[in-house]
Structure formats: C-alpha cells, structure tokens
View 1: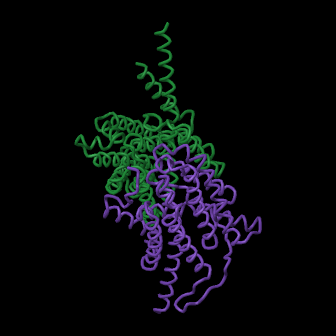
View 2: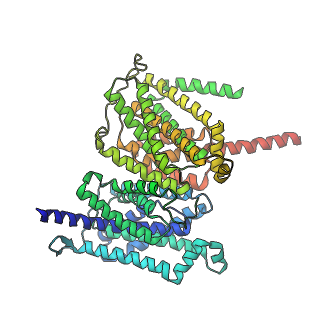
View 3: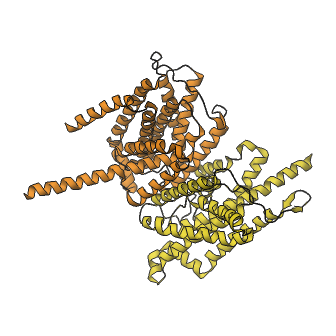
Length: 293
Length: 315
C-alpha cells in the first residue's frame, strides 16, 4: 500500500523535475534577453515550439535523427531569432518596452497560426531516442528523462558560467549596465545585442528539441508553457540567471507535489505562489538591475 | 454646431443600421467597442498595459449568464451584475498589480488572468470546457420582450451609448487629467501631493467594470459564455483594437473594434488565417503606424489645416 504511494510520489517528482528543467531553461533565456535588451520576449514559447517542430521535420522529411536535430534545430531557430531581431525588435529599441513585448506577441500569433495551418492542432508523437530505463526499486527511471535532467543542468550551468565567468559575459554584463561606455571601448554593441537575442532564442529552440520526445509536438505547446513561464519569471525575477533557473526547478517540483496531494490545484499553484509573493514583497521581486520604471 | 449635426447623423445611422446589417454582427461590434474603450482608459490615459483584460470580459460574461440563468431578474440587471462582479475582481487584482508599472504590470496581469482562467475552468457553475449555454434574455425592466435580436439591438445600443458617455466624462474630468499626468510623469504627480497608486487603482476598477459590462452584453447577445472569453487571445484582441484605432484617442479604439470584428467575421471561414491576420496587422501597426488609424487621420487633418491657414494668410 505505502509502496504504491511512494511509486506515485517519486513518479510525480520526476515529472516535476522534468517540467522544472524546461521552466528553468526557458526562464533563463528570457532573463538573458531581458537583461541586455529590456525586451520581454513573448515569442519565447513560439520559438521553443519551432525547435520541437524543426526536430520533427528533420526526422520525418530528412531522416535526420534526434542527435542531429539536437545540433541543427537550435541553429535554425537562432537564425529565425536573428532575422526577427533585425526586422522587428531593432526598429523598436528606443521606444517604450511595451511595444517590443506586443511585437513579440504578434510574432507568436503569426508563427503559431502558420504552424497550426500547416500541421493541424493535434499533437504529433516523436519517438524517444533512448528507449528503456532503469528500475531503481522505488521507481522506474526512463533513460531519456535522465538525459533531459542532466542536459538541462549542463545547459543552465554552462550558460551561467559563460555569462558570469568569461570575457564575453563580462562585455554582456557591462553593456547591460552602460551600453554607451562599452561602445566607446570599441565593442560593437548592436551586433552583440543581435547575437545575444539569437543565443537566447537558440536556447528556446534547444529546449524545444529536448521536449519533443516527452510532450507531444503541437502548435500550442509554446503558448501553454509560456503562460507558466511568465508567472515563473515574475516570482524569480528577470534580473538574475540563477534566480530564474532555481525558481524554474523549484516551481516544477512544487507543481508535482501539488498534483499528488491536491490534483485540482496543480494548474493553479504557481499562480498562487506568484500572488502571495507579490503581496509579501510589494516593493518588487524583480531585481535591482531592472531598468524600467 | 457641426459636431451636433455629426452626432445626430451618427444617431440616425445607428438606429437604422439593423435594417441593413445583420443585427448580431452589429451587436458584436458594440460589445467590443465598449471593451476597447475600457482598455483604452487604462493604456491610453493611465499608461497601464493590462495584458489580461479578458479576465474581466469573460468573468463578466459568466456572472451575467449565471445570474440570468438562475433567477428571473430583468436582462439589464443581469448585465449590470456582470459589471459589478468584474469591478470587484478588478479591485482585488488591482490591489496586487497597480504597485508595479510598465512591463511588470503587463506580465502580472497576464499571469493573474491565466489564474482566473484556470479557476473558471474548475468552478462548477461555468460548465467547464463546455461553457455556459442557453443564457436567457429575460424581459427588459421585467415587462418588455427582447428575445428578438432586432429588438435587443436597441438595448445593446443604449448600453453602449451610456458607456461611451461615461468614458467621455471620466477622461474629461479632473480625475482624467490626473490620470494623464500620472502617465506622463508619475513622480511629478506624487510630488504635487497626489497618490498615483490610488488613482491607478480607481482607473483599474472603472476599466474592469466597463470590460465586465461588455462581457455581460456579449453573453446576452450570443446567449452563451465560454472559456474563450477569458483566454489570452481575447486579451490580445482588445490590445490590437486599441492600437489599430489609435491609442489614447477618444474614437480610435471604437473604430479599431469595428475593423477587427468585421475582419474576424470575414475571415471566420478561413481557419487559422484570422489569428495570423491579427498578428500581422498588430505587428505592422506597432512598427509603422503607432498612432493608429484615427491618430494618423487626426495628424493629417491638423497638418492640412495648418497648411490651408498659412496659404490663406499668405494670400
């Protein structure tokens, strides 16, 4: 009897960690983009969805396996981000940041609509590249899920190291504080902004490829995760990468625990946490690096 | 004088319109005119982008539907109940949200609206995924039968005119002036001894009430309320209407509502194209036409008038 409930509990915790991995990777990308550009990239969900579709198309039309897609799809999605930054975000960079939020929202509508028009709204399966798993005694752990956990941790830690402990990262952080000063040192800030955006978008694409074998590949997968990500970044703040990542994992776990003990509340618990956090810290959960007011 | 004539002509057109156009389409436009006005009050005058306005629209629709289905109160009482419920929701949400501004306010209202969506999905009175069907149009004032759409149109028209008049009064009152001042320079307003948060909260509640009224009207026009009314695409739609028409102009959002609803109606048979078109129009408006249709027209007329005056004085 108690054995079944531990199975259930650990199974749910695993799902929570997996969901949390995606929350963490996506909110990290949002935080990086926001940190440098002050753009809330609503299209992040759509770009994540594009990553999953790219993997699916590569497999079904070009016969390229998951491992190939893991390399190619993020680059394709990053290129999409590159074009989008030049055409859509650049003309808006000196305006109120609300405009760039709404512009990325419009891109979401267009991209999601076009994909749905082409592939329909039902989800399409993507076979796991690593079937099977291991029985740990208290639960069954599929290999692919273990891989996703490891991969997302590596991605998050790697990105954090890149930004906090390399020269490139130092330029980024400096441009975030004072772009004019950095430019006067001979660094091409506009190009850095474009590449940073493309990098963040590529991260979303990578998450999408990793998500394809776990969730169904469907046009609405992006906007449904984006809804949660917005709440996650409101709680965790968008100023720090560590904050975004930690909040992502923790909220994934919290959602899973709620699912075990109070299933009806699982879809709402993150929003409840957000509201409580907003009331408890009325002067802002967003970090001091936030420049808008 | 010309203004009175113009309003008179508009009144005649509005009253005669159902003879020429399908009344349900007209009523849809009117519902969204009220909804767009409510949104314009926040973004256009107070500078607050509420990215979850559908929670008030859909919430109002559900409460109106519930009141009309579970009792025999007159239809107008049901609609007003929807507006009152949305105002109450607006007060609670506003308490949490108005302390932030700009992009944070947008994100918070977006997330709270999703929370309301999930709440309504699980609440027993809403009918969950199926929505609330067969909402009755109870007799107006308890005695006038309004079940026919050609008659009910005039009820909706009256409510719309009343809301626009109220909106006009609000933005031209001292309160409206303070809102605009907060939008332009919040710190200055605070230094003059006003409490910006309080004014923003009042504006938020007024806007929520108006959005709820629009939702209640919509629920009685279509006689159903569904989760779509509370979903984020509806929040986006009202933003599009306002931007397309002209942010912060009196008539812009109304014009925008008309264009978007007619476009939706036209593209209804083309599946996904309606959302794609909405996205494309919004993107083009943001990049090229930030003053909106009415705003650009106004600017053009101004230039034209100045040009004509200089021409006359020059001659």
